[in-house]
Image 1: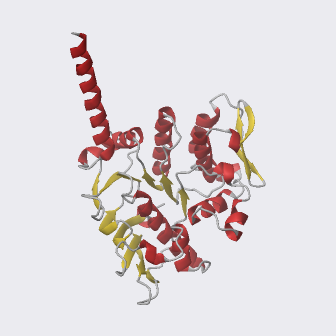
Image 2 (image 1 turned 45 degrees about the vertical axis):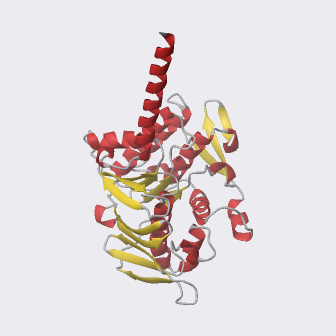
Image 3 (image 1 turned 120 degrees about the vertical axis):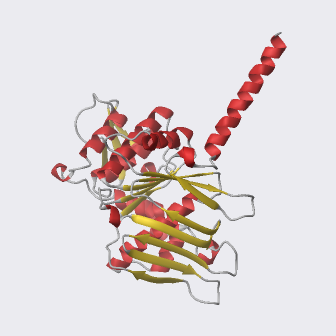
Length: 354
C-alpha cells in the first residue's frame, strides 16, 4: 500500500476516556501502550470503525451510525461521550480523505457522519481482538445476526474475513514468505508441505506433525497465530491492508512473542500498516529494538503512551520513535519496581544470614 494511502491521523474530543487527543500515525507499525483503562482498544476500534465506514459507505452497503455502535457494542452512541450532555467528535484522516463522526446528546441533534471529504478508496482492514476466535468461529455469524450475544462487531467482521476461501498459490505473491514463517512457527520446519491451517464448513483445523487437530484442541496462542495465517492465506490481508491487533502477546510464551515480532516486521516491510495494543515488556521492547537498530529493511515504528494524571482526568498521549523517547511507560516502570523489590529482598536475606 503506498504510504500516502495509509491512516495518517486521528483526532478525538470528549470521546470515551479522552478529553482531547491527537494521534499522528506512521505508515509502518504503531504501538499503543498504557495502563488498563487508558483507551488503547478504543483508539484502535474507532480508527477501524471509521476506516471501515468509509469502505462500506463507498460501497453503499451499511448503515453508518449503527455500525459504530456495533463496534463498541453500544445501542446508543451517547454512551461513548466522556461527559454526558456534551457532543463528542472522532475524526480520521487517510490519504487525502477525512471522515468525521459527531455524537450529540439525545434530543439535541442526531448522530451524524459529517461528511467524507475526498474520494480515495478506503484500504481494507482487519481487526483481531485480544480473545482467541478461531475455535468459536463455526456458527458464529448466524448466532450474531439472530441472537443477543456478548461479542462486538469486530468478531463478526473477523468471522466474515475468515469465511473467504484460500487464494490460489500463484496469487500469494508477497505474502508467501510470511506464510512460510508462520507455518514453521506453528508446525515446525520438518512439517509436510501444504496448508498448515484449513477450514471445512466454518470449522478450522491445524495440520501439525502430531496430526490434523480441531482448532479447539490446539493451544490458544497457536490459534491466534493460525488466525493471522489464514487471513493472509485467503487474501483478507494483503500488502494494501491495515491490521489492528489487540494484545498479540495474549497466551503466547516469550519465544512465540519474539517470532510474532518477526512476522509483524515482514508484514510491515511488505507494505501493510499495523496497529497493536500491548501490555507486554518483551513485545514492546523487541519492536523498539527494530527502531533503535534498523536493518536493511528499515521499518517505520511509532510508540504511543496513554496515561492519566489521575483517575478523573482525561487520558493524555505522548509519542516517540522508540521507547526511550517515552516518559510514561507503565510496562518499564513496573519492571523497574520488580527489580527494586527483588534487590531489597536479596539484601534483606543477606543481612539475616550474617
